[in-house]
Length: 478
Image (tube, rainbow, N blue to C red; front, side, top):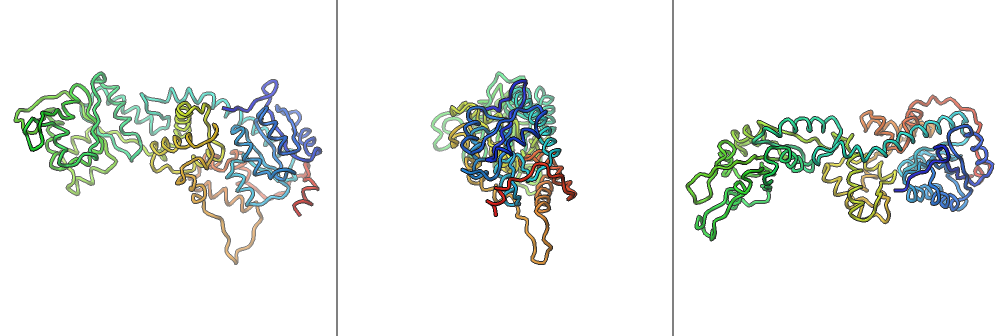
């Protein structure tokens, strides 16, 4: 993966891209004394050449360049160096360009004229944040290793509770019920329970109850003897018997026909079963784990599931949380899957662009971990290099970039407001949708938390204009 490099003495490199040499010189003077190294580029082509040779940690990019639009250059920078942050600078602020810049992955944006104190504070805050992010990235692989529990990954409070219960249950259970929405990892959890149990050396047999037709269900589960019914030309061992000495995993237990539930209850109570056509009961030493995404209690009330079977299963229950309820784990899961698929498809160092990260963090993942895994698998196949962008996601997810945000509109009789107020409203809208979580809101917007606080806390007081706008740019825009 392309990493931003630091200069001598661990000084962060900042590239100032502006077609005005005086503006570059002024910014170098303004930022002198900080722990950064400043270089300049006066064209888009020169900017890209520098980034190819020595990716900087930050680019201060003028929105109006002579040979390319700033937003187009932003896209190219992210493709070349996804870990490089870009702060757009413009003499002519507009809400549309600001929102577009954020959606396309800009770290932040500034409007000329810029206060010297404001700029220095922003760069200081960026260096501190960059240092933390770099340290976090170096630890990310280690965190993936230490946050796994025999294949399950998570550090969120919800998953830590699952791990704790699972480790206490594993040595002692004979029957367990795993519940959770589709895609949360119920079979993975069942395998972990088996691995942690005293019968871990025995077989782990999987039965997808939803895939078996009712006419064959009993035969598949319990087996039959030769001649038991038409077509039974040989004696067959069932899945219960195949799992003897190990674990039988009954996925989608809610789909077991009511006619078979009584016989399954006997297996759970006595560890006995009978092959079809054989009057002799057979004993088995088997642990049984059942899983479902449905509400068995409701099915009992509707007489679709036996009450006695339900209570036998629910005696030991583990519930897996939805991915949206364990978003603290999203970063680790993404890192884990990108590492795996990068190796699988020969794209080492696979990463998400800043815009793709914002989309992944904002998208609700209704299909949970399975949808995340399948989507990143698709992205890894579709991306041309080692940087995954929004267009590499499946259409149903990439479309969410447009549909997931509501437009801010004004009625005809409403007083017009300054552009900064529109920006503040937009940021507040994102913050409200993130239920007040400032860290998540800042990640979605593609800005630092300090910038988020600044936007929300504006008082409207003018600042000292010590970094003036470029006169030539005023004429161009006019």
